Amino acid sequence: MQSRGVALEEGKERSSQSKPLRPLRLLVLFFSLCVVFSVISIYTVKHFGIESVATTMSSNFQPCYYEEHGGLDKWIRPPLSLIHNMSDKELLWRASFVPRIKDYPYPRIPKIAFMFLTKGPLPLAPLWERFFKGHEKLFSIYIHSLPSYQPQFPPTSVFYGRQIPSQVSEWGRMSMCDAERRLLGNALLDMSNEWFILVSESCIPLYNFSFIYHYTMKSKHSFMGAFDDQGPFGRGRYNENMAPLVNITEWRKGSQWFEVNRKLAVTIVEDTKFHPVFERYCRPACYVDEHYFPTMLTIQAANVLANRSLTWVDWSRGGAHPATFGRNDITEEFFNSVRGGSTCLYNNRNSSVCVLFARKFAPSALEPLLQMVDSKVLNY
Image 1 (cartoon, rainbow, N blue to C red):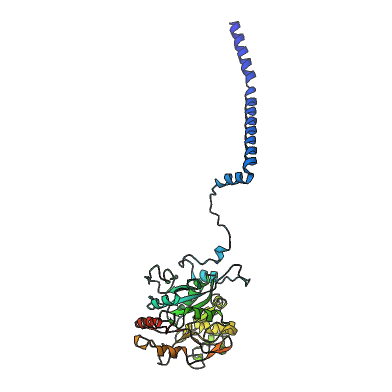
Image 2 (image 1 turned 120 degrees about the vertical axis):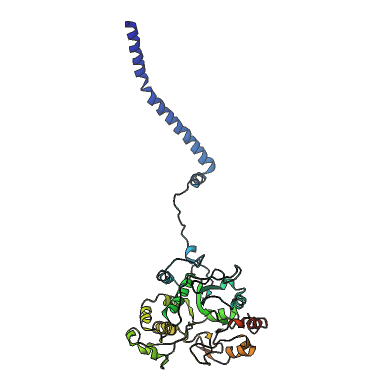
């Protein structure tokens, strides 16, 4: 029994002596691994370079969030789609952004934004297709129609996918001007758009694209009619409650069809001062689409207005609306009379070219109009 007890005590003593050796062995193993890893790292860096190692290691790392890379492109490229969920207030606020430096830091090609204000279809679209053909980098198209209208343009058409988020607009009411500002707002989102031309579904171009492009781009003035009509259909529509913001001597009248440059387009969309006054006090028989823009721009920027529109209309038949021309009206003599016989100022010089567009043309006029293109009367 005694020898057995002694043996047990000796075993316990050896066991207690071996326990401190385990951490020492682990420490030696750790240092050995560190030495091996260091040798491998030095060999890798020496033969492959530190950048390749860093690249290899970082390439396997995937961030848990999406980081958008900054750059100029996201500021200057036009929206991929014209459909958005911005309210009018948000849209006009966004469209009013203006660079403070005049020179663009990239090769900008200025474009004309053609803004079609229509209730639904564009019956003269085939004529416009001929007009636009071959000039795809120099124009953009925006269509404001009734919200319920679903266009059926084929993917090959220049009008395909060009409808903007729209609302119901009524002739003679502020909703019509809101539609025009909505068109301007969407067009201003494309930094390449320099000129903005408002047309309707019954408008046609009187000259080819190149002529119209150079005429507008070289103009020192924007084109909007703004004259002082002292009769019952001019000053007779003025409401004294609009003073002192708008005095009767500043009251102007003009056609709703305009052609303005980018600077003036921004002036129109950024307005929050005149809009509520005209909306409240200019209602039928005051037709706000004939007075709001002409009056506001006369007050704010009269020196940059040519005080005429580039869109020809015929009021000679009388009534609340201009004449409409159909199939039997389309002749070479008709266009010679529309394009000639008048003079005007262009860049402060006399010019015989005073109009670039004409309206109103019925759908029945499409076939003879295309014949005018084929015969080079309309040299598209």
